[in-house]
Image 1 (cartoon, one colour):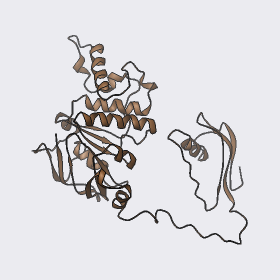
Image 2 (cartoon, one colour):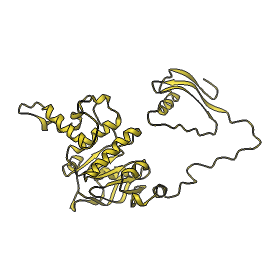
Image 3 (cartoon, one colour):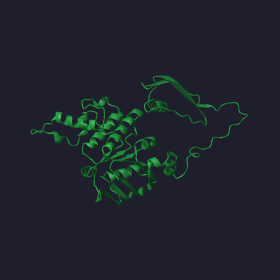
Image 4 (cartoon, rainbow, N blue to C red):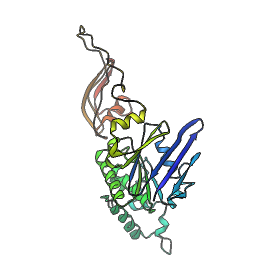
Length: 323
């Protein structure tokens, strides 16, 4: 099934979110939509999914006019959307989360849910996408990547021909991302049409066949991922080269100066929750200090502690020399 959009427009009051954007999603391909924050990626995807109605332009589905009034209307036509936010209810079972809005499909004559039939159907969808998840798993014990796979299974439970993924890897760590990318590859191999929004170009280049670049809500171009390099993607996303102008130039060092700049923030032997132990660092005036690591490695917890949002288990901090 092919979904084509031509010259889409969408504004919110005086803010023009999308202007003159065109895109074509073809069967058996993964089509990425990339751009800076505010470029119009998610708005474009939501219009394709029926979550937003365009102010102008037109869409066709296999050549027929396509103008869904809601995500339910789009799903009925074979187009399903997976949102960026995790929407799993951890108090429900895996199968209940997959069929949350269609549980009555499994109701017997007396109105009771046939749980065995529901769980069998849910397990079949999970196996279809290669997710290593059992319907008997406690949803409270699953990681974010597994929860996202359940959301994809939920979208697939309506038997769509086109799947739209809005930044589905945004909150995931490396292993969780790989699980979702494997699912995308499985669905592509099965001939599904997939649109994929991500801020991470390594993910885009790993799974996408084509990509459409947006800048300030406007269409820049559509390219084969095999024919464009990351540096050129960056340049077209922002309208200029980034090699020398991301950060301001560093001031030249005074060769006669022997003293270092004063320490502004001092973190000594800090432990926070279960994530951080024995962390020490100094940040000096005029300095940019980078923290690197996978999601969940502790950088967020350290920032939260420095800002007073999380208590220290032990250790101390000083700001401009004062505790």
